[in-house]
Length: 112
Length: 112
Image 1 (cartoon, each protein chain N blue to C red):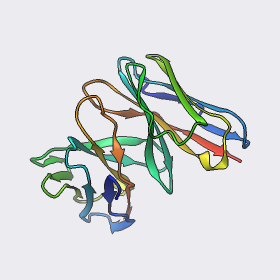
Image 2: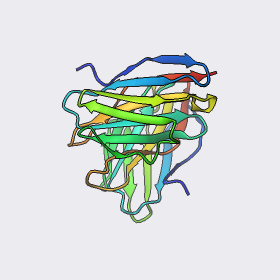
Image 3: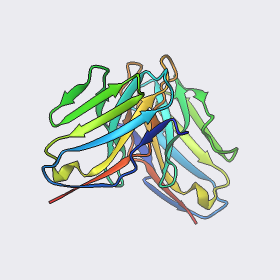
């Protein structure tokens, strides 16, 4: 089983739609969680961190369920510019082992 | 801040040749990571350094791969001899102790 698994996608949605991505992680000791965005032929960039209480940044909402080892990302009122690959990212443990473990990514295309 | 700087941006080489990828992390960042991205396997951590010391190289695929960080401002990833299956995008990322990862633009390697 992969350490971080995501919906494979691709998701093709019309502009203005709401879309949700899911992600599960296998290591229950994982400490930190993120969503990254990667545009075609570009590097990954941090979209938002994910906190246990859930957090929102404009049209984006991230949720963490530690009991189910599940992370989600909700995008409301999607824009053409939201088209990208969304990567679920986990840091497996605390301390000096701070390497990011990436899911395989979910591709989103927002259609006009 | 110039961000994480990688060179070259693109590299095309013949099988059997030595390839050296270079990375300059953000000044003050104490952790440096090398990742490889392919369509089949996604983003994989190859090796990471804390304070110039290699901490975990378990992701390095085989002995043909080596990485060094002679000082806080420079790291190299070397492949010798290169093979077609090494073709991928190689990303370098750096992070301060407080967290927050920044990726370079990547080196797109093609081995023919």
